Image (cartoon, rainbow, N blue to C red; front, side):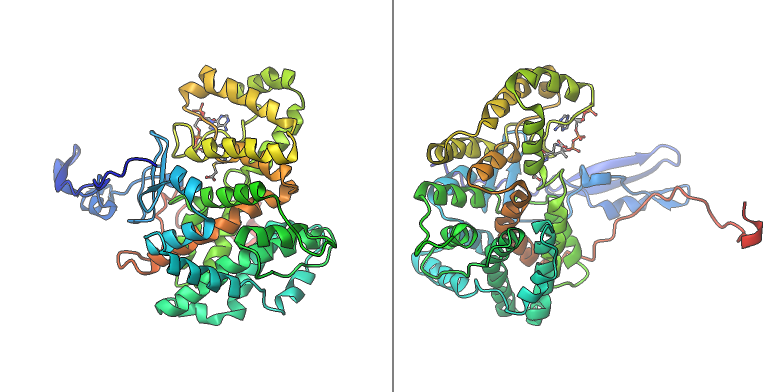
Length: 438
Ligand code: CMC
């Protein structure tokens, strides 16, 4: 296991930033706390009648919350949940242990874990009427749209989720969400194949139960290879949280207007679906297939360098080093291929990575493989079609979203999300009647 330094990662610097506006000579000292200034303080300067603000599309350099859940050092390639290095958790924990850790801040004791697993097992079933909702979707509906709509629909089945300030109601709904995500995902998968749903089975753990709901056929008892169950567990741990990413920001933003957990997480699922976020692993496999053979890799790389293509699964807003999750997944690829046989696309991925780690285009921009570069290969080897890949990301991310939601609604500093804009349109025009419009 890694060393366990007890040093806090940020200190109150009790320092100030001195700002001087040249035009008027106005000056102000802005307090610096945790290496940030408070943006509203900038309003002390008025520029052409407008209070000074920051312009930051995509939140490139804006902290929107204080959070004690996940720590990332993108330059060093470090990821920790509640202070525990991701590699230690991936090696020693189960996904449900990690979900507890994210929600409670501490690893569970043996009895806490027993109680947590029992609670999750108890809530795995879907409300019966939800099956009517599922039946309404076309057979070729993308499972992410089914997931998004069904999680939003949970609020009609569990309206007590609106009592989010009550810790008991909140805990119950968080457990419901985490418990039901695999069931929902498996039902969406089987619906697409016109196969009958397989209900949850209490005799299996979280991951193996998910696999049996997906892949059980007519056999008396489904049995997954333990190496595959462990690979699933590791993938779920790696995807459980990732601090203020696009989907978590969507969850927090939707929660900020007073929404329940399900409505907020449904927005998170929508955000995750995009190809620049959780949809990237699906895009990686598409890219590998299009390249087709190893000898076509140099031509593809030239296309990336001239802006004709994008190397999916490479680059990250935060990691300017090898994504620590990608390192762990690369190891899982080997374990899974031992059971399933090698996916021939692996050779193309390895060749692309070789270029990515040596070619100046990628090196100078600090573009490294991210979590999605290898995960699609594992998912395919496990028998998942590409449209299920993002679903496999959403299942474990529900625990991260829930932890972030909980942190958000118990944080007295938080407010309704409402960014500013710089208005660039026309002003106060004379209304033009229809017959005068050209
Ligand atoms: N292939 C080729 N060039 C790239 C790539 C890439 N994958 N990613 C970034 N660049 C270039 C980009 O064109 C820009 O070049 P220039 O400075 O010449 O204009 C430079 O690198 C900086 O990129 P950016 O787009 O400003 O970076 P960003 O932080 O806004 O975008 C990203 C981050 C993840 C959206 C982007 O790297 C990307 O599109 N990657 C491919 C999609 C992908 O794998 N997404 C999964 C992210 S990890 C899972 C998750 O956490 O959601």
